[in-house]
Each structure stands twice: as C-alpha cells, then as structure tokens.
Image (cartoon, rainbow, N blue to C red):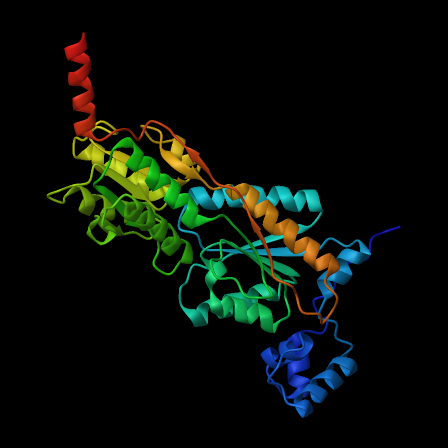
Length: 363
C-alpha cells in the first residue's frame, strides 16, 4: 500500500488562523502552547478559528506517525566552510538513516528583518522541523518566526537555550580551559588568544575558559595578548598579523577555531617564524583544515558531524512523541570533546634552548 502523501502546500497555516481570529501568529502560538498573557476573549477567538479551519499545528508528528517522509529544514550561515562541510555530512547521514528529507537553505544576513524574512520564506517550503547550527542557533528573529509558526526547532551550540528548547552542544568553557592548561604545562606564560565572533556565546565561553586557566596559573588575563576574530580565515589573518607584530609577541597563540589558527600559521610562515620552534599555534574544532596545513594543527576536537546527527535524532524523537499543543520540556545533549595533539605546539623557544644546552653539556 502506498504511503500517505505529505501535507499539501495549501493546507491551513498558523497565519490563516491568525487572520481568521484577527490576531498575530505569535498570539496563536501562545494559545497553542498554553502561554500566559493572553486574554480569555482572544484565546476563545483563536480556539474557535482553529476549530473552524480544522488546523492542526503538529503536522510533523502526524506525518511521522503515518509513515510519511518528513521534511526537516537546516538553516546555515557559518563562516567556516570546513565546519559547515562536516556538519552537513552528519546531518545528511542522520537524515538518510531516519528516512527524512533534508531541506538546506543559507541565511547569510545579520540583519534581523532579513533573517525573519528568510525564515518565513523557508517555512513555506513545508519544512516540519528545523535544525539551527551556529551562529543562527542564537538568532532571536529566526527563533521568534519559527515559534510563531509552531515549527519545532533544535539548536546546536546554543549557549543559553530556553526552558522548553532542544539543544546539542559541547562544553566550550571546559575545552578551552583544557587547551590553555596544556600550553601552560608546556612552559608558555605569554599566551595570546584570538576571539571568535563577539555575537556568539561559544566565543565568550572559550575566552572565559582561557582566562580561567591563566588565573589558575597566577597570570593576569587582562594583560594577555588578545585580538578579535570572527571565525573566518580572513579575520584570522588580520588578528594573527596584529598579534605577531606586537613588540612582546606571545610564544603561543590559541585561536578560537581552526580557520583562524590556520591563518595565523600562514602569517607566521610569512614572517619567517618556524612553528612550533619559534611559536606554538593551536585551534579549536578539528575540522579537515587542521590536517591540511603544515605543520598539522593541535586543536580541540569538537564532534561536529556527531552533533549534527544528535540534533536531527533529538528533533525527530521530539516530533514523534510531542502531543499537539503540549509544552516541550528542555532537552539537551552535551557531547564530549577531546584534545588532539599534533605538530603545531611545543615548549616555548627559551625552554627549547635550555634543553638543548643541557643535552649538549651532558654529552
């Protein structure tokens, strides 16, 4: 017997209900989700419109229960092509395993109105659930639009998820703390840090981990060399040039992602510095780029593909079990990170010379 077809494009939407009730789509969403601050007269009008139009907000759950192939959306705007490639591989693999279709769309603008407009257009493609990887996982305009339309969402690397949200992440603070401790254990005391995009919570968590490790070692983080980056290779070039042009240049640089770390290695080569003999450079993510540069990059392994898979699995499970109109419970999966030690890191130059002299004297 043929599977039921997926819902028609002409099916009743939350906007139809809003127009019939004379309210906004957000108000309809509040009524459906039993939200507060809704007048009883307004609530009654919305419920009447829902009944008259035979509107069911949980079309995704109905499709999955009937065996139809749900359409899951993925909105992206990550400046790191290496990160995005790994994320898409994980999402596509999980979609194939779950028997759902993945609809992929970019949203490059940082303007709130444009993000909202892209989201509204995206929703008309009949997506029944949405995955938001960083940085869009922290976009309030996108989240508000999806909430208004009653579309379930799972965020990835969202540092401050809402009470009723689905989220997948690693512990960015703990990972950065561990990497900085590693550099300190090598003997570095003048360690520079290249920040990620200032609008991302993960950027602040990584910088906080860096500072906490320095504080543990009795080093004033406020005096540590620090440059602003934006997670792109180009921003890493600019930050790396500024960092290495300082009169008292650091002996080690911790960049907030692999793209910026790779760019800093390029700057060091251009300046005639040998990595890691003259300077150690480490990154974050362990994308394919980490093993494409020379020397290969010491970095924090963030399981990007696994995070994408976990996000889709979490979303599908929620869509299957979530009763129409019921409030979601906060669900979060925190995946493990790992330290990957390669050739781009080593003791500071002074320690290397002292070790060589000691070996020479003992020979």
